[in-house]
Every structure is written in C-alpha cells, then in structure tokens.
Image (cartoon, rainbow, N blue to C red):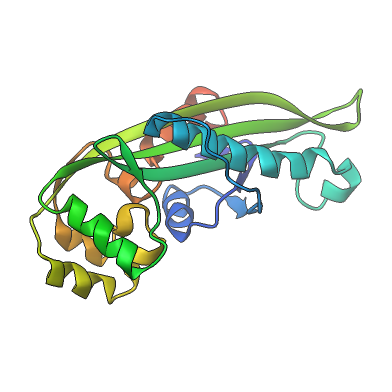
Length: 219
C-alpha cells in the first residue's frame, strides 16, 4: 500500500490512533481545543457536525501558516495534507448518550442500556489541503464525510455488576459509559454492523473512501 498524502488525525482518542496504526497508515496527531457546539438533533447529524468542527479547526491551523513554516512537515509543493475529524455517540431511543460526567451518570447510562438494544454512530469528516503556486499557500481541494451506524445488544445486568464495571474506571471516557474493546465487552451480547465503529472509527469504510479517491493506492 502506498500513501499519497500526509494524514493528520484531529483526535486525541487512543482507540482511533490504534485503529489507523493497525491499517498501516502513517499519520500525525494534532488535536484542536475547539469548543464543540451541537445544533443538530438526530445522532447521525450530530456526529457529522462534531467531526466537521474538529476537522475544520485543525484545517484552519494549517491554512493560516506559511509554507515555510510547514516545510519540515511535508513536501508542500508535491504532496498534500488529509485531515481526519471523527466523533462517536451512543443513541438509545433517539436520545444521545455522551461521556458520563461522573460515576453517578455512568451508572444511570449503564442501567438504561441493560438488556436493551441501542445504536452507535461515528461520523468522519476529511479535508484535503494542497499547495497552490499562485497564492503560495495551502488551499482546500477536497472534502468528504460519512457516518456509520452499528446496532448493539446488551445482556441484562444488575446495578452491582454495573458498579463493579464503573469501579474499573473504564466507562468514564467512553460514550454511553462502556468500551466494547475493553472490560465492557462482557456487557455486550451481540452487534449488527461494524465492530470498529463501536470502538470509535469505521476503519473499513474509511479505507474504501481513501482508495476510491486515490489517497492510498495498492501496488
């Protein structure tokens, strides 16, 4: 596999970083401190909105710099930069469950999921910047976005099992207060759809998008 652009992951998620590494992609991580503002209602629209905000914030960091400042990062006149923004939410009865603010909220979320089915949505937004000789700057040349949905069925569990899981600390930085790739796997009965999407990034769909646009090529 040949990678034809420099990739920037606009996310501090260790899970997304691991998935991109597993795919054999080379990338840097650059996280913006942009304030996330939600104006949409449906979970699929929310993840696209938030992924766009993350991507656009990091994109702005590059377009406001001069090519000389970027010369150590990329061969600016021949290559390009692909910036990846992503966001994941859990949806139960169309109600979005984000990351719990504390153990009490984590318990409430977990008990609402017990013995029920819910959906996990991940939105991905990518922008491509390339050098323009006439403006001597980076300009946006492409943008694409998509979301992936996975249905998750949870085993019935009681309050004490949920509290035992919360005591591990794992739920506190996870949408919906559980991580399918960790200890939280024991709460999950089955899924329908992309497993990696529940982890936090729909890798297969992303790689297909890259291939179709020839940002990666197979030789």
